[in-house]
Length: 503
Ligand SMILES: Cc1cc2nc3c(=O)[nH]c(=O)nc-3n(C[C@H](O)[C@H](O)[C@H](O)COP(=O)(O)OP(=O)(O)OC[C@H]3O[C@@H](n4cnc5c(N)ncnc54)[C@H](O)[C@@H]3O)c2cc1C
Image 1 (cartoon, rainbow, N blue to C red):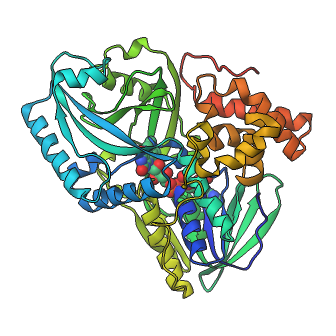
Image 2 (cartoon, rainbow, N blue to C red; image 1 turned 180 degrees about the horizontal axis):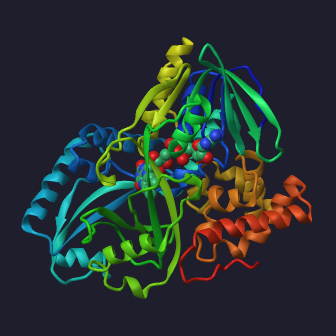
Image 3 (tube, protein in one colour; image 1 turned 120 degrees about the vertical axis):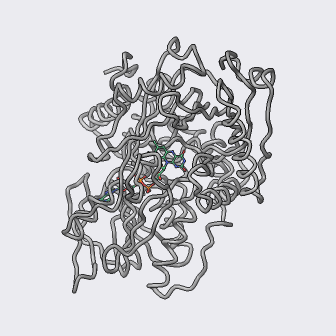
């Protein structure tokens, strides 16, 4: 489904993470001719390294970032409506373990404020639980110094990669050209104004020029690098910080909001994709975001932080880790104190850039960026993304395919009759979901890579189906397998566990 760029385009977007994808959808729905290029796979950047929460963020209340919390709570409601198959409500618990009466009072005020800021919510409001209620649902939680818990609701996106993808599928349905594995390498300017981009197809090595009337840089944590590349001057507009997660055997039933005894930072212990996810950390990371990974220190920090609440944590096997790099609008101070509010600026003449942001607010951020581009283009059609369902957002069957593809599930089921479930999914991904490689399929089109065996039980079948679709020879099959094995194995860095995938 990857189509070569042909112009002329109204807008060219750099970066196929959730923000670029949201902008592509928004502008395509307004009738603009859009091209989007992504150097890796769609959603393979920070979008896949997140904690996967769709939340206002209780933590940002403490930073008095009311505008951000309100925006994200409003967006949470919109996402629950337009992508109900991908975004699900989730109960959060703040267990009070040994904290002072003042801490509990602060949490009470915080939860009241959180409810007040989500006045248009469909989810239940907050409440307080006694010890018996708290441990009934969360038997692994310590009872030592336990003083009940606060409870409130937010939401979770199991696969933000698919949220990103569905935005791009809809953009393509409305005429957008979407190219993954295509890198922007330079800008061509006239009187300082960006007129076109030089792009390189990383699979064929072929270079070409992408002409458009307006450009948008949505490269997130890569922003400064790309800006420097295109503007020929150093850029230090964003502060990049690393966050990691580790996953272990299922331990919790609810999403637990905990405060690290090491430094007071808020972090989560949540049920996700059949495991318990613990994270995240927040440490400056000035290196190439592509190289981010969990190190032994990060893992130890999380284990030490969890131990007082879930004393058995070290007895559970750790399955994997993942990591991402946040792009925050540059500010001094501690990493955690930097605002998560985004900014949209014309960082080069004729190129708007998105700095910062969260997955939760992606649609609103995209709307703001699309407004800027539409004004420049003279497009007056209004934004429709708050009400138009994403492609799978309609009535979905209540089964595995329904949970993944939503109302598009019958299309996959139809293929399954001839090819079996894995063959059908792989063919569907190759034909209709911009899937180019085995790791795209296992890591970002489906959730097989998140299984305990990293998808080992089905990966060969998927490889066969993709080989059929793309006419891969033996050498290509081997290199696809090796790339997936490396990608999956990387998640195990520094952990004393074996990669379950055969060599
Ligand atoms: C640890 C962690 C936890 C988080 N948890 C949450 C959470 O629970 N909830 C939430 O709402 N938000 C969360 N976030 C924030 C959220 O993940 C990000 O704000 C969001 O994913 C950023 O999306 P993006 O599109 O800006 O960036 P990305 O997803 O990184 O996309 C940018 C893309 O640009 C591409 N690119 C770079 N250079 C080029 C080039 N030269 N040519 C072409 N393409 C290029 C990259 O390959 C990349 O795919 C978290 C972030 C981190 C790091």
